[in-house]
Amino acid sequence: MIKFNKVAVIGIGLIGGSIAQSLKKKNLAKKIVGISLHKSTILIAKRKRIFDECSQDLDIVKGADLVILATPVDTIIKLAPRIAALIPANCLVTDVGSTKNVIVSKLSKIFPNFIGSHPLAGSEKRGIINSDSSLFLGSLCIITPLRNTPKQSLARIIRLWRKVGTRTLILSAQEHDRILSYVSHLPHITAFALMMSIPKEYLKFSAGSLRDTTRIAASPSNIWLSIFLSNKQEVLKRIRLFSRNLDALKQAILDNNTGRIKKMLESARQKREALK
Image (tube, rainbow, N blue to C red; front, side, top):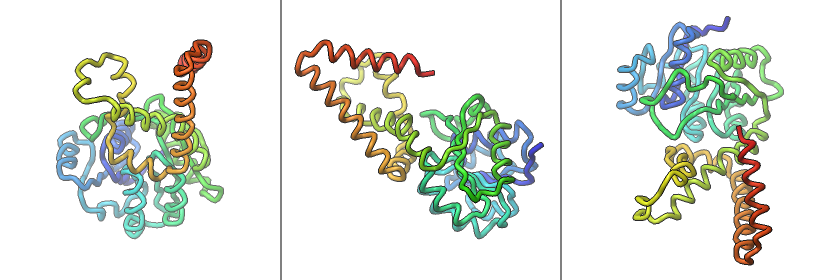
């Protein structure tokens, strides 16, 4: 059985709040504390009784044997040295950032027991008000250890994520960022760009197709700004790939090449049908 004495969740939005609720529901920690910069977030957390204690002060992490970093990527990197000064070297540290290479390379030098994590669960909805203990059930969590990651620490992180309901997969940080640039970062880029392309006064004429295609464009801008810049090279490669495919479709339409257009649409349809 895995159980922590004190868990500190830094960043108590949708993901951080959901982790805390799941840990409490599964009885995986004797005490769970939450840290947020925003008083309004703390008030909601207290009202929902998600944490045993909440604060805007990082000192609350003292005595933790597990720290979960659930802020935007750039904030994780910025806060890491301050947190390291407050916790013992044997404290287990993980994050839930959507990019891993930058985080793992920097935080593994700061925390002896750091292991990167990325639960592939979430919503375009934001904030602790939308947190849910069942958010991770049936989802996949990618874990990105290094060669010198302590085996016992890795085993504990794997058990932790499985206990809250995820399947786990180990990848390198580099492979994680490459794969996610295809299946997550590019879809967000295209959804944002699509919404930028539509005149506001025409939105009242939209039907289900626009809503379905652009749902994720409602995601928090500060989170995605951090993701795009922290995985810049991979994101730029995927944008170039998308542009080539868009140009190919444009050229086929320009040429009235019905065979080419049909072949491209059918290929896309078959891929979409295979998507689980």
